[in-house]
Image (cartoon, rainbow, N blue to C red; front, side, top):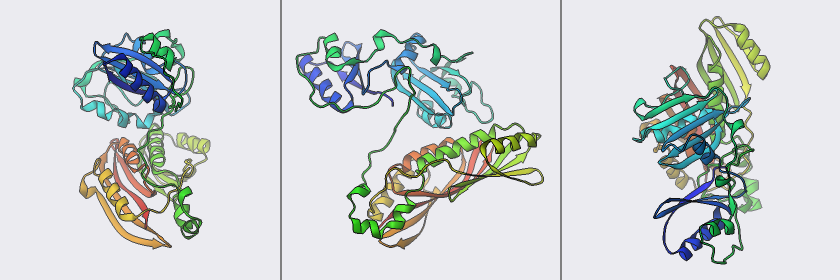
Length: 400
């Protein structure tokens, strides 16, 4: 998980130490302090001891003001991502390659120029290519592709080692003898281990543990439906499916359909070899159907069901919350509501989202906006043309 970072304005040392101690009780007991200027400290909080990954990458490249570093991990769909803005680490985490564009979208609208460094097969490229994306030319100070992976060659730096709270405060003469009695931890990326991220919105809905047994009995179908895969994870897998099949040489993905936790993908022949598709289908245990110049693949999702189920909440506030979230991404005419159906004490509202010539990364952004809501991904029907998606995604919103 990415470390928690906070800027503190300089004040009386006793007050600064008190604030750092207070935040460490919420964000982790291992910290590192960096003096940014005469009036500011940046403090990094972590659950575990280790070394700061983002800062280690930054130091390796001589601490440029603005840096984007991406490295593909071998035999994986994951990549390491580090973003530095104005001399401070903004992102250091491990993500799916399919999510890279959506992670970097906020940085494409700034006026900062970045030193961009990539390693391995990442979708970010210096010039636009099919199935990849590039940064706006005016935001690129330099672009470098490494010949070999950097991560296995990184050496830990002592000045980037996380320290116990008391020792870190002593190093800046901020320790006045107080001790934390309660320490709550947040996991950080450390060298020598994998990097994982949990990014979630605060959930305002009660868990099923709080529901009475009578409610559980009367909402059996409701809980069964919401035990289907998380929409956020399902949409990320959808991007990965498109990304993987689009890489088949001489074949074009024309349409992807998702329904009842199964995919159907149509590929059109454009000079490729049928043997390549047959090989991929056998490796992945896909069902294959052959037409004239087209192949159809069918296969189930690999995403498991929900870890947590939700109590039945009032539907109207949920609709308001969903509308507000979706309108952060989409135009108002892109969201359509159907008929509400009752199932016991629960009701479901059909929601159809229309997409028109959007990048695949939009599915990741959509999934993030749905996180924490009692939403089921019912189906999707998407056409793929020149690297852009058009079609619709159907959801069910559940409440009472």
